[in-house]
Image (tube, rainbow, N blue to C red; front, top):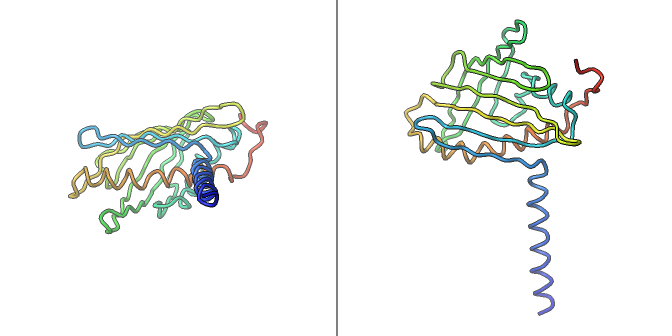
Length: 188
């Protein structure tokens, strides 16, 4: 009986540790249908300064290291506007679906990054990244609305996005925490 209690306690402790460890960066993700569109809200908190966070989020070509992003290349930069050509691959019903787009980002240094698809395979894609300081961490807050142009029913797409997107934000949080530190004095 003592062995049974010990094993149950050990399993409980290890599972609660792995759950805490799995959400080290307080990753929160919701995907909600709005008609044919999906609203995606996500956030995570990383122990880096706002300058490092902004450097990470505007390193557009490095986003290829995030699962599902096959390619990302800056095609133009004018003032605070940056256009990036991206290729994303989703697996829906075991079939790979590639989405190509040109997304224009508008940078508001150390605060906000708004974006909108200018051309591409989605019917609609628009949103923001906001950076907020919280004690010794920076909170990355992502909000977007997307409508895919697909013969696959939207409820099927919604199901697969909901199940895949959390992992992407977890990987982004981990990579942000590993991003090369930028000195606060270099922020302008």
